Length: 251
View (cartoon, rainbow, N blue to C red):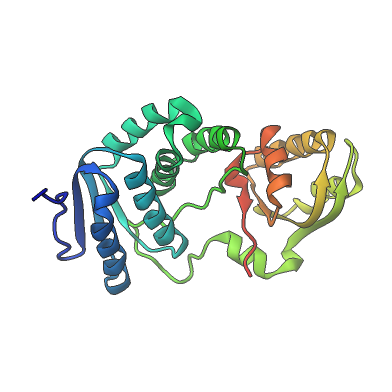
């Protein structure tokens, strides 16, 4: 009888995977999600993983994405070794398999490594011909969570009066809607731009927007682009606007 992959039992909010991560780890990954529903915090230790196949990587990536979107304070421990292995695997591009890419991008989100995420997200989008994933990191699990420390994006999305709202088609280097950004950013620490109703932006206007965003961030302000469609977001990323700027609009 073939032995099952070793995973330490979840006790006291702890789970650690060992061996090669594969589809046969599905029961343990399900137990991890179940524990997260019952306990205020779970520690996930990846230090004993020796590798992964694409199916196992996708299973764990999906589980981490679920917890991240719930803003669950998972404490991720020792992901460095498996992340280095994934970094090597994705150099093969699309041939590496989507599971390896998605797990690597998830680990980068959980480690709050947005600079590395920016590069890999764009490479992933080009390799698989999809829209780049958004930068939406989880809360820092090592810090006590407080109700008042909700992400700025949620606050911005709930109050349209605090957002610069654009719509229709944005064209050229002097588009009148984009020009309003210079005045709107004055007196604000966080500059939120609602692009939900933008149908299209051309390359020239996207370049002008990139320059305006650079000037805004040069004033030590945070820029959020909310609700941009996949097509609009992909074009803006191609000219250099990074995934960390993009926020999904709260429903």
